[in-house]
Image (tube, rainbow, N blue to C red):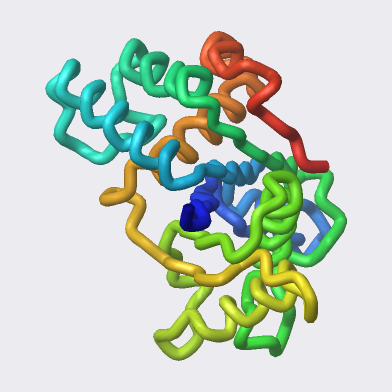
Length: 223
């Protein structure tokens, strides 16, 4: 029997920008960047990916929803139905929330043009490393939302190397392949966005019901 392929689909809520800058008097001035940054990694094998795709297609048809599935625009009942698939299929999700008001590290590396947002690179790789270890799988395909900030001279090669170096070792090949995609065309990526949105709404108190739909046994926080 052939080995089952495993995948990690990862998306974020918020942006990786620095939320404040200091003016000439040393006062904090908002930049417009989000205060919170949330990453959610959805871990699936081939069978669960197939079941998720079918489940989301059925829910799309139920609500006659043709647009990209985003936490900010879909009907609330549809949002809940998609989150219920996590329990029905048995999907493990690993997430990390950073309150940037309390973040002490760097958002960028001055003069380092290849990794110009180390905040994004570091936190993304941390979530993927934790998820890959937790699912005890090898040669995983990682699928990431396509973002220009991870490109260097029009290519993702430098970012990919950084991620491979952080997650793989000389003896353990956790990641086999990295794909950067437009989340509009990948249902599993859109589930990651919905989970991130539910966590953010729970954390901010906007809507605590969505987070409760996901059983605790399938949701792991990364500190």
